[in-house]
Image 1 (cartoon, rainbow, N blue to C red):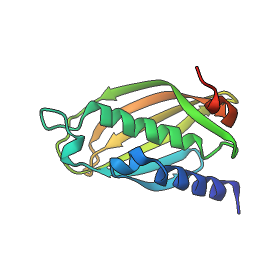
Image 2: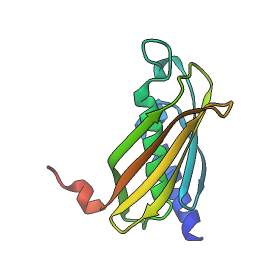
Image 3: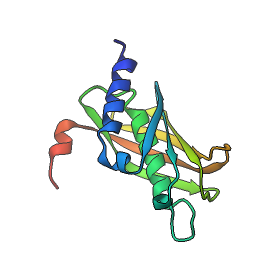
Image 4: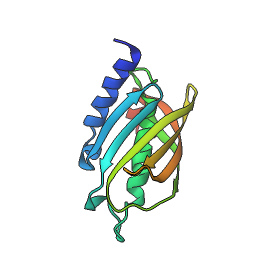
Length: 145
């Protein structure tokens, strides 16, 4: 099995094993080297008080896609955590199936720089984002502040 195939399975396991991603009904669509994409069918609980997609859901989707794009190149014992997340909101949306894509722009040994975009089912750009992901080990994740 190739490295990308192993990482695809790992990513699928991580997505399926995330109670939060299951709760919001997020679906993984594709994984390729340095790229991850998924979809979310908008439901009422994804909306803010005016009936549009909540900004926090938008940020979450972009963060998830950019973060999981990193797992396409990481070793089995490495993980990422978000060190910086920036979102630009372009258009509100009230309903539909959203598509989110994250990709690696530049990868170092400790930091990975990513970009992402969130599109409506009619391909209107809802938001775009950039992130810096910090590469951490299993031991780093176990440390308490």
